[in-house]
Length: 142
Ligand code: SF4
Ligand code: SF4
Image (cartoon, rainbow, N blue to C red):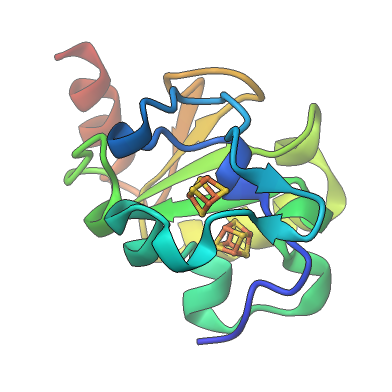
């Protein structure tokens, strides 16, 4: 596990129920230097670590730099247990950029990933190992 460095991408993307923060709403507690209520931040913020932090990713793959933030399903408030990763675009075009594609191709070799465009709520498509993509499409239909 590594530290977030200067990234605050998830604070502008993920919903935080405890403070009524909606998906894609920039958190009202977010300051230039990071979380303004760090010591008293909600439990879901304390519990969340994106894939980059958990896997010790390379610096250019940091979510705010690469344009892609992967939310592991086991820490997801959306309960997408069938889809191991939701890949949120942290800026327009991030999913299709060089670093975004590098991350996604690597992760999708072993796990199903739902690609969520900038500002979107639902995956635009699924990528993953052969035979698993259909499971993602069926999950979306529910
Ligand atoms: S997106 Fe990842 S690296 Fe960025 S602030 Fe959130 S947990 Fe840290
Ligand atoms: S409370 Fe702090 S850690 Fe949680 S979303 Fe807001 S700025 Fe981020």
